[in-house]
Amino acid sequence: KNEVEQSPQNLTAQEGEFITINCSYSVGISALHWLQQHPGGGIVSLFMLSSGKKKHGRLIATINIQEKHSSLHITASHPRDSAVYICAAPDSGSARQLTFGSGTQLTVLP
Amino acid sequence: NAGVTQTPKFRVLKTGQSMTLLCAQDMNHEYMYWYRQDPGMGLRLIHYSVGEGTTAKGEVPDGYNVSRLKKQNFLLGLESAAPSQTSVYFCASREDRSPDTQYFGPGTRLLVL
Image (cartoon, rainbow over all chains, first blue to last red; front, side, top):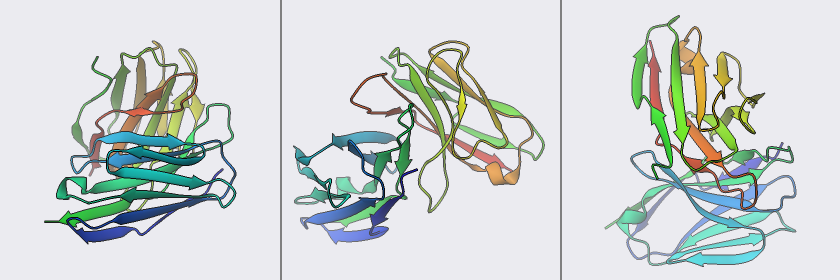
């Protein structure tokens, strides 16, 4: 079973700041997932990446497979980015279950 | 497309009562999952299903049972609720091929007194 650790647990930023959330995992994987949980509770998938970097608007995810580490960056942060960000790594089982990090609570102040 | 829906959204139970949570998806996904989310902890897998008529235990299955009689529905049952089962329950589904993106329901908040 993969062990997934995220840091920091909580992060408060001023609007416009550059945000970085880190994720490390214990077992080599084919791809890592980043998800966002809205204040209302809904969970949506942001990225799945297996190498290098992916960008979606102001969100950028990077992964280093050798170091078993991924980062999620938010450029020019905005209060609407306030949410819990969760990384998840697949287990090796046939159902490819995900092991989830405990999440990073991001609050962006205006 | 409604995606993944969950019923009910919120429920209060007394210790020892039973209930069933319903998850429905209209995306024809093979894989379905039930998770619980507790403060300070990541989502933890309770049970999962790799297709109609199949179920398997996840990380925290004790006290729960599941059934997948129809491909689109995945039911989670609590036979005798305990306060330790107070949590937010999420259902998710995905296709049987890459990418492994899971689609989540809106969650069910359960309080066991």
